[in-house]
Length: 212
Image 1 (cartoon, helix red, strand yellow):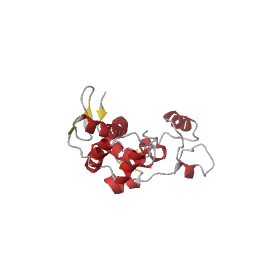
Image 2: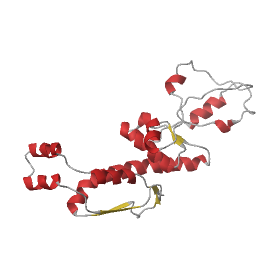
Image 3: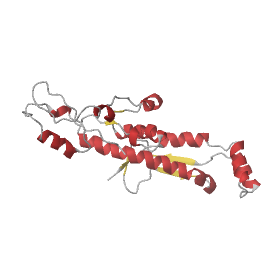
Image 4: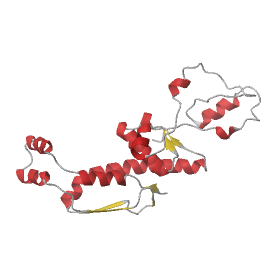
C-alpha cells in the first residue's frame, strides 16, 4: 500500500509564523515551573532548521519519509506535535479519498465530510486533503473560498427525511432518491422496487458516504 502526502502548506505557514507573545510568556511564567532563561529563549524564538518534504499529492510507500526535520533538538521538539498533527490528519484523508476515487473508475467523487469532521477546522482542512487525494470537489464552501477547491451542492438528509418513505416505482418518468447508508441498502431498495427497472439508466447512481 501507499499513502498520499498532504499537509505541507499548513506546516510551512505554521513554522513561518511561530512565535511566543508576551501573553504566552506570562502564562508560562504563572505556572512557576520554568526558569527565566528558558522563558527568555522562547520570547526570542525563531526556527533555524531545515524542512525536507515530498510535494503534496505524492504517493509515499513504506520506509519512505514524508517529511524530514533537521534542526537543534529543542527547535525540532517544539514543532513536532503540530507537524505530526497536520501530516497524519491530512495524509489520512487524502489517502482514503484517493482509494475511493480509484475505485470509482473515472466517475466524479465529491467530498461531503463536514458533518462528521473533527471540528470546524477539521472540516475545512479535511476537504482540502480530500481534493489533494483526487476528489472533484467539496460541499464545504469555505474550503473553496480559502483554497480554491470547487464547491459542489449536496442534498441534506433532513430534506429527504421530510417526505414519507416509499419503495421506488420503476417506469416512465422514474425519479427517486434512495436514502440509505450502504451499497447493500441500495441493492435491497432496487430489488423490492415496483415495475420494470430493466430500462433505467443506472449510470447516475451515486452513494454519499463520509470520507472519515
